Length: 168
Image (spheres, rainbow, N blue to C red):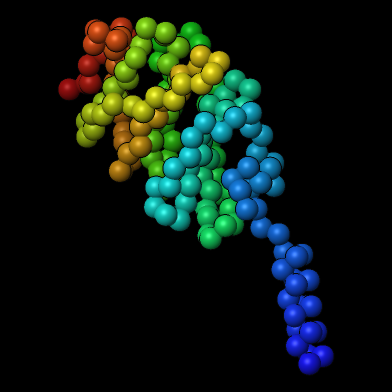
C-alpha cells in the first residue's frame, strides 16, 4: 500500500512540475514572441496551427505545433505595414508547411483583393479589426514564384488598385 502511495505521489509531483503551454498565448509568451492582438488562427494539417497576429506596426504570421493540449512555437515572420501602399503584401513559407501571401489593405475603397501568379488566381480572405485596419491573406497549396499581380476592387467591382498584368 505504501508503494502505491509513493508511486502516486511521484506521478503527481512530476505532472505538476512539467508545465507545457496549454494555449497559443502561453506558447508565444514562453517563446518571447511579443504581440498586441491575435487576429486569426487555423489548422492546416491537424498537427500545426498558423496564427496571424499584430505587434506595433507589424503584421505577423507564426507556426505552432500542437499535440493534445500542448503548444510549441516553431517559426514566425513579420512584415512592416507600409501605409503609403494601397495594398501592402509579403510572401511567407512557414517551414514549407503553409505557403501564403499576407498583407494589409490601406485604401479604404478596396473591398476585395485578388492575388494572381502563373499558377493561381484567388480572392484573399480579409480580416477587419476594430481600429479600422484591414489585413488579408491567401493560403496556397504549393510555393509560388514571380511574377505576381495584386488587384483591389471597390464595392461596385471596379478596379481601384492594380500592379499590372503578369509578364508574358
